[in-house]
Each structure stands twice: as structure tokens, then as C-alpha cells.
Image (cartoon, rainbow, N blue to C red; front, side, top):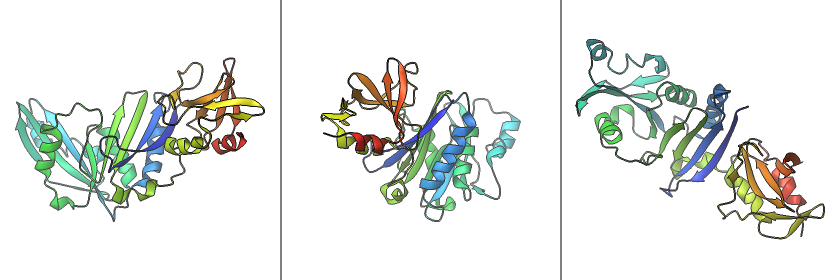
Length: 289
């Protein structure tokens, strides 16, 4: 079955930003669960619309535009993601560059922000979705288009942007991740979030790392949380892909289930994965000098 979990981290290319990554694997099986999970997560962590305005830059790129293209422009081609009672639209713009015609505009999402963001991403994965303090009528839409579409030459998988909040989806079909970057001024809701959080996991395991501990008289060794080996993902055969390897008990590997809210701890013995503790803190407390 599909597995989904959330990680909270600091941005590697901008220390002033925090981000949460909503991961999903085996999405070809139950893709709709991921959409619902993202909506629930975003509802819990995003700044309220009263504090920030949410926008989506929608672009239609046409090499040889027809009369129909000229008539529909951008909103006519994307009316499926426009909810008149929940969204406002900028005017439609047309520009030509390198022999290609671009029709574009910006949607402002006023209500049901999380649900509408996910609907837009689903229908238009190339949409640039972001949060800004400015109102729709104050945005320089052509300048945003130039910066995001025409002048964007970065080959980085994750794009660096200057908005207080912005989104990026990476989707391979069977694995998917939605990144949400949030400036500190708007990231208070991330602190202490009780959802599956690998940073929280590291803090909990930190209490027993690099020491000689034992459980039921069996010696245990936990990888350093600063070691790249911490968080090695299972190969999908010996253990599920959503488990993390954190250490060993007398040669048998110890794994944490990222898909469980309490980070259940498992031991792999002779190729069989056995539940040790139904939450990570029980595992930490069971370890003694």
C-alpha cells in the first residue's frame, strides 16, 4: 500500500527559510490519499489568508497559436481550476519569446486555500504557487512572468525564490514530494508539529546515540544523528521503503517506521521484521546503561 509522511527541515540553500516536505511512495496504488493528506497538512501549517495572500501563476505555452488559442488565452483553457466564489483573476497577458507565444495570468486563492492549491497542482503541475503580502492588484504580473518563466535558467531540482511562502512539486509518478518553503515570520505553526517528523525523530534518538546501551541484556548501538548513515532507506525487499535504519542490536538491524505517527521501532532478525516498540520514546526509555 502507499505510504505518506512529512519531514520538517531548514532550507539548505537559504538558512532563513524552513520547509516541510510531504513525501509519498507507491503512489500508483492509492494516489488520492496523498492529495487528502497534503490538504490536511497544509491546513495545519499555512498562514491564514488574513495574514498572507496566495497566488498561482498559470502559463500556457503555444508554439503556433490558432484562433481558438487567441480566443481562450489562459483562463479559457484553465476554467476547470477556477472557482469563481473562491478565486480572483488577474487580466490575461500575451507575450512572445523565441518564436513561442505565452498566455498567462495569476489566480488569487481567497478561500479553501489548501484544497485549491492541491487542485491547481493536480491540474497544472507547472503552476508557480506562492504567498505574498501584496494584493493581487499590486502585483507586477509581467515582471513575475519574466522572472519565473523567461529568465529562470537554474538547473537545480529545487527552485530558489524570494516569496514568503512558495511551493514546489516533484512527481515521478510512483514517488512524489511537495515542498513548502516558509519564511520565519510565517512559520510558527511548524514548531512542535506532532506529525511524522524526521527532525523530531533525530532529537529523540539523540539521547541514546554513540553509547553502550542494552535492551533485555542485548547490547545496542545507535548510529550518530550527524552520520550520513542515519536515515538509510530500506531497499523495499528486506524492509519496507518507508523504514529508516538507525542502528543494531547485536548484529540485528533496528528500523523506525516513518509512516507511523509514533515512529514504531522494529528489529530485523534473520530476514524477518519484528515490532519492538509501538513508539520511539518507549524504545528510548528502554535503553539503559
